[in-house]
Image (cartoon, rainbow, N blue to C red; front, side, top):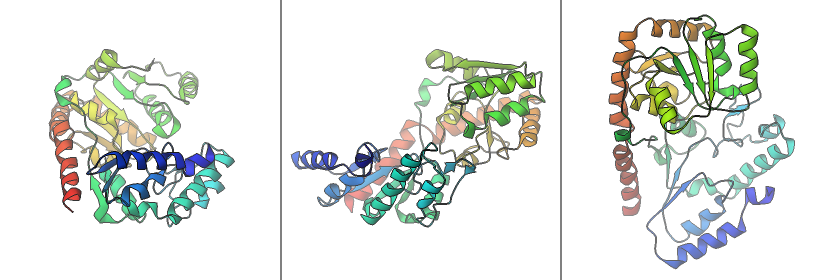
Length: 336
């Protein structure tokens, strides 16, 4: 399994057969590193076919793809110092797994795979700038945000009576910071949706602090998730790692809800402070508490920000706008 994570002869043979079966104008890759591996890239490029790589994480510059390790946000591998992944056991604290990721990065660099992409699209401007900072040529990086089918989202601009968190319950999401902040707003209900490895720790933290205004719903989808978002006063995203382009934010905007978001990663670009929500310093309990207090104390402002959020969703995060962006990239590569 470890060997196939680094290089897959099977994938290379099969992509060669596929490409020889009929002519192709372009290949668009998405989340393929560990399942298919970059071993397929030479087969594509030898045939003169342009390659678009839509990245959703930091895998091409970070061995564990998250720029996150045991002590928080991590950029130690900048300058191709991938050995730090092994030193800090960045792959789920596993020495073996971290060694595999380290070898993978050095091997792919030695093979020159990263130079074979014609365009690299990123869903957030922050991710694109971070890739450039780590050595990816700026001319190859294109911004194409995530999207939703806006027409399927019926907004509800009227503020509800609770604050909503939706997403994975894990430490880097900052849920522990949110709970500490909510202790100072005992009359404001907090609803947490989702599941994850931090769920039991959250329950213990809430019980220990005597928090009475917390509801954990578990995983929600479909109508239940829609109703949870439409019924809240604001969605809070307290992340403490480099968020990319969270769908939770786009869905909140589409439903006409402002977002209270940590100023970190892609969130720093997506939340327009005072217009579509509020920003606060990531990991700062006082800052989050003060921001929540300001938000819940002004329902009229929340409604106005929700309306602005919907406008932004329609203008920037719809399917049509993403289609036009990606087709412009495709046409340019095919012409060249």
